[in-house]
Length: 436
Ligand code: HSE
View 1 (tube, rainbow, N blue to C red):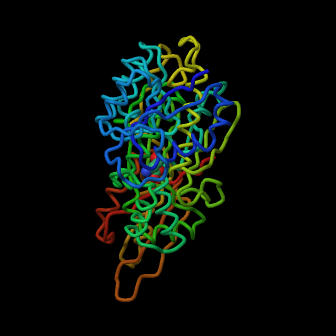
View 2 (view 1 turned 30 degrees about the vertical axis):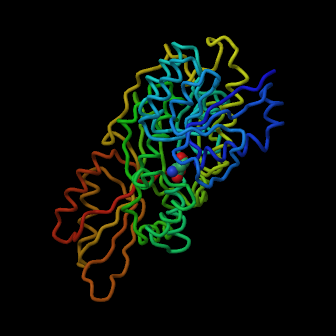
View 3 (view 1 turned 45 degrees about the vertical axis):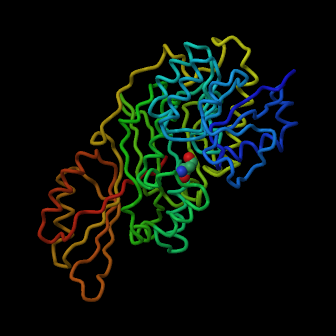
């Protein structure tokens, strides 16, 4: 049988990795897919550039439309990132009846609903395993392997750059900006690294995971998102003293009549496996009602780990491209007419425990007054430590861990505490999850 011709949009880190994996493992891939997979054309803005893969036999073009419009190409692999022109190119490919493989989480999180509707209309596949957690096959796990379960919650380290930065800050005492530069050099960070450190990249990925886990439409605009830029070395240290690690998590949870979708730094017990996931590695815990908690771990970024997911999608598409579209695995795991409209809960409604760091005057009664305000709002204290002040400073750090509380209750208590004359700075708060 003739090889399937594919076209690449983008020949950078992931594109180069994809060419290398396809060529190195060509024989194995053909045995699995039933046909060879040949990169016929690739779009690159700079054809003369030195790259990580050979380009012999690939026609390089500087106009991405020459890939999409090429009638010989059956599968378009979108690896340029961003939403424009990626969206226009993908929609056109679908319109022309081509299958699409993409690593673009922003594209799927923001425009997936319309992309999948169009793909269903045209009977083509849009595969996006590489969009979430790089090389970890988490989409396939949620969509297929756990299809017998009611998914209860997902908690994941799904941004490698953020995890790399937090790990280096903790282990090496390095500066935030210095570590970020290294992540950029290694090709982990997004083109705009604020997407990594402000949690936007993780929010894109969480949007996709939640849709597939719960059978809800993609709703990126309703994810509560907080990054890691306000985490200080002292919080990292105090968390350790209390037996916790600070990780940047994406959490999706069924809760009451709705779904919580949130991305933020979080204290988790140091003994949890997730707390020991370091560097650029990603990990996702999925709790299903039948299977219980399961953990998926692997590299979340980088050329070949991401290419591993892209190539697996290519094999999937090649295997079933001639099958009846109705019998394929649905894009978002649930049949398109069976998506549910579960409400997404506002962040004030979520219940979580808290780490609170106060800077207070070292005077009699301050600890008692803060504890009284917390008690007035029904907030129970799990632990408290007061640290010695630095020489020459009048304020001392006072750290509380609370039991679970509704966020809106904590907001009220925090406003009252911050109004106390003895409290010298806004409270530094970080959510805490035991992940039980
Ligand atoms: N910037 C992303 C990360 C790349 O650091 O995880 C993979 O999506």
